[in-house]
Image 1 (tube, one colour):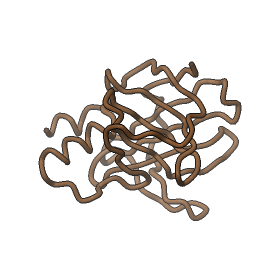
Image 2 (cartoon, helix red, strand yellow):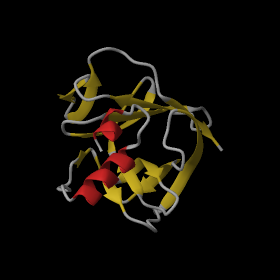
Image 3 (cartoon, helix red, strand yellow):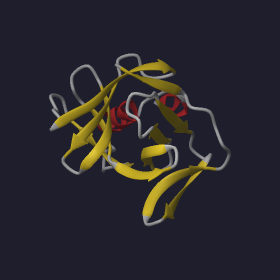
Length: 153
């Protein structure tokens, strides 16, 4: 179980799944929420094919969710993690989530939805949660490269 927390490409849904199975689930994900098998977002805006270090079964979708646009990291059974924490800047729309005392995740989606998005994973101890313009978000201490590029399909 501890190895899962150190793996940089491990998806948030896999980490949350470990917590669910281990019995220590008490809503550890901040900035989003776990969705269970069969979840269907109200509207899919973009489907992505991931290139890079990601969980092998994961699919990525930009969706119009119940609370606005979000990134869905989905497993084959339809369960996954919905990243709802959002802000925008010159790079595009950012969606992020984090698990206290574990990884932080950030997705950057360009305003031009036909362009690739990027997924970042911030290992525990390499980021701090800060409130910027009223939005809590994981902020890396050192600029890092994305672990994956999400290519629109």
